[in-house]
Image (tube, rainbow, N blue to C red):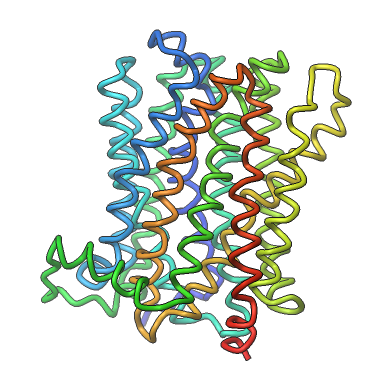
Length: 402
């Protein structure tokens, strides 16, 4: 009889799935100046691409809870990887229409991954380690960004950006095939008799969130955090390339450092939340650091000391990217028993709504100011809203978490 895979192998599989879809999503923004030149559009239009991704991801995430029950969490993740790969191939065609369609497919593949992985991890994770374990799994997003920042600009230099997109698609397919051996163990709770209704599957997760004050607050702060996270990762390369005069490879390396700080932040914040501050105060602290860092962006120039710039980018990465694990663990805690996947999908619907709004608005602000730095300073606003919401509701989490 085959020995069941260990918790660490399962966590590693979930981590790599998350990393590959995240890498696919951020591949185009990493080489946006080159792609925009070939397609004949301004770089600021990358916000439209990101919005298209998250329009699809928003619906796919909300639907994810129902399809986890029918197909199993791992099978749904594999389907997500294949759909993402197809979207990447479409985006390799240098025409705006194909890129928008490709972005929609990437979003459809990306969306169900987090609800599916939450469904898997909530079954085996001790409550006292939930923030840390979920934070480790969510490092897949910045790790994917690191892969994109390190590899995609080099792929572009040596093979061209279209070949780079196809290579990322190939990696997604390889990952989908590699995890297939875990399916019998991880999808043992699937129910093929489930017949998801499209309307019901969309409405039920939102109703679940709306019925709980705690989940509503979490959904609202995730909306705000999502604006900051995707604005940072979508436009950072363009900011360094166009405003500060960096080369594309150097800008990609800076994005990698920022994403690496997000990895460290997710693990560190998860550990502190579990062992010291608790989730509410941890998220307040993260938002406060983010607010301070965003305020400094208008002062950055091509004369700014590079080490100070990297320090600022690391703080931005650790906060704007690092919040996610603590947040998802708290969603799992607040969800009714057996409904972590559905609650995650419902709250992430609001997260993706923030992503949908954030990058296009950021692009408009950057175009109006003629500066990405001043647009980054506007991220003070969502950070302030997060602090206010969490400060007013901090007693609720203290009581509910014991």
